[in-house]
Amino acid sequence: MGHPDKEQFLDRFLGSALGTFVGDALGEPVEGWPHRAIYSRFGLLDSMVRGEGRYTDDTQMMIGILETLIEKGGFDPAICAGKFQENFDPTRGYGRRIFGVVERIRQGIPWDQAGTDSFGNGGAMRIAPIGCFYYSDLQALKENAIMSTRITHNHPEGLAGAVAQATAVGLALQYGLSNEPIEPERFLDRITTQVTDIDKGFAESLDGIKSISRGSMIEIIEAITGRYRLSLRAIESVPAAIGAFLSTTCFKDAVVLAVNLGGDTDTIGAMAGAIAGAHYGYGQIPEAWLSALENRAKGRDYVINCVKKILL
Picture (cartoon, helix red, strand yellow):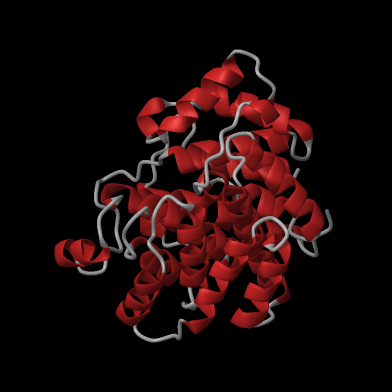
């Protein structure tokens, strides 16, 4: 894995991991709310509703991937399945199917036989570390994104969503390091190329982002919510998160827009934060958000240290 400047790369990798964390925590209190209900209550929600930004299953599973990369110096699905089982905290908002997956892993069922046919976004929500680690080799990124997702999700839409999200993270990091401007259509076409053979319907859903023109944040929110249902389904939520990134010009706006779309807000926020963090870097995450993140045994500082260990 080559990278031009270790400090710059660390900044982007930290940005993506902590971007997942802050987007997750910002969106968690309004998960399931329609965007108009969020706006009616908060205006544009742009600060942690509670004193502490608590993470959900999105970040907890991302931590499992970080721990796997540290232990193996690369991704290993058997190790990662064990990490998911060890870290599993049922109070973190896991979907019902994951309880069975984790139990099967605990019983010793092989990683590639424990998952279900879920088309949800659970593979995509946690994928940021794979997008960063393999950013310079999109084929390796794709293969490892698929393996990491198959631990829990076997449906083509779930797999395509994870590959699309990981590719968006990897490309955002590439553009961030090179300082090249992103051309949204080209960016989307490169993601589409990665997922067409996995699920053609998912690839087609990405095209919807191309028709979303930049405008005020409210106008962009209306355009995205008019096109996608913002549900747990990967085909509805992953394109929306990518759209939030491509429709804005800074880290904060990407995450605020994503969370204010409504629906599966913690995951859409986590995914947009992962992409935007990979592009803009850790230094662009608002300090008020970072300082609000929970910081117990596997909290903010633990995530930071995990990323640093991966790059040692």
